[in-house]
Length: 238
Image (cartoon, rainbow, N blue to C red; front, top):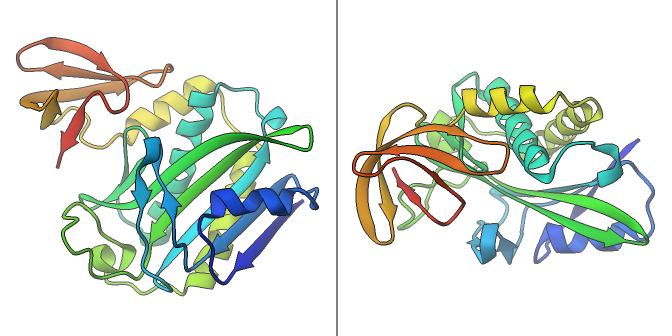
């Protein structure tokens, strides 16, 4: 059973969903708003969102339902969000390691997954911010939306309902860890292409080879050869 709740405005759907979990018993509990005022990203980053133009969505699922590692769950979340958007737009959509979603070289989704214990149950709290109708990103040159990248205007409520139904269905039967890794790497942004990276404030060319089961990214660097990196140790410039 799944449920989807709506708030007219909130600071962060990842924070607010805990209040709903105190009273609801669904296997999949979703919360969304079109006006998130203090969205959070990975490692303390903020996620700015224009009111009534984008979707902030969080899905809470019990960790006991998933017999995979946290890294695998993170990867699989990125995969199914990528798949949903690829089917919706009929365009190539990629995953920028570790879990941003890229459409036509612009970031259109940021994902934040946390684990929380609420009333003796452990949950994966899957939060994602979707740029849907926003058409101005000021100085954020690598950000875009479904509108800017496809020219299509999606109705926010309909978009969210389809998203929620798709994710909950895909999470009921997840693939093996090997299949998750293969699918993640198949859709990895800039894989096997020469790219520019920033490492300790210095730039160097390199080629992304693959992500591994430990959450690390392997890059063949022009000067240093094949190296592995964890998030925030290296920055892809695009």
